[in-house]
Image 1 (cartoon, rainbow, N blue to C red):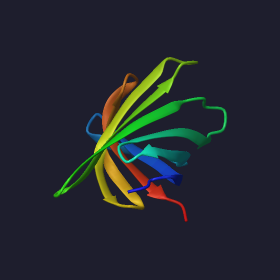
Image 2: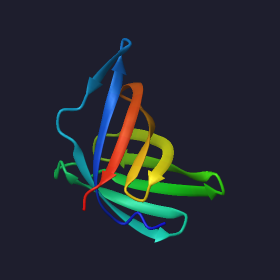
Image 3: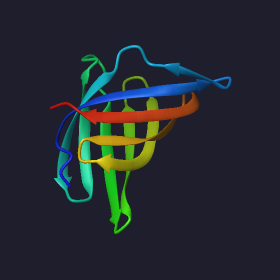
Image 4: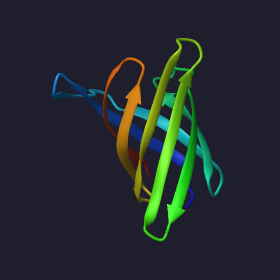
Length: 110
């Protein structure tokens, strides 16, 4: 499965039991390095130098992904994990050093 392309990247964060949806989704470019590894960079917001490194794990029952985000400038770290719903849709959960965990969705932009 080749995830290479431009993706809309959005998430909801749980705050005291309530979901706080993001107002503007980020856009992420993903480049598949091999069948199990991919990397990414944010397109929007353009001033965020975060680097993304991901892994795909497949079986006969489906494919899972893990994605690490590192912003060396600010020290921001995040981990995203979930399943590949289709070649154009990923969904899962995330946790970071800024606060409570939440839900994450990536949708491929045609």
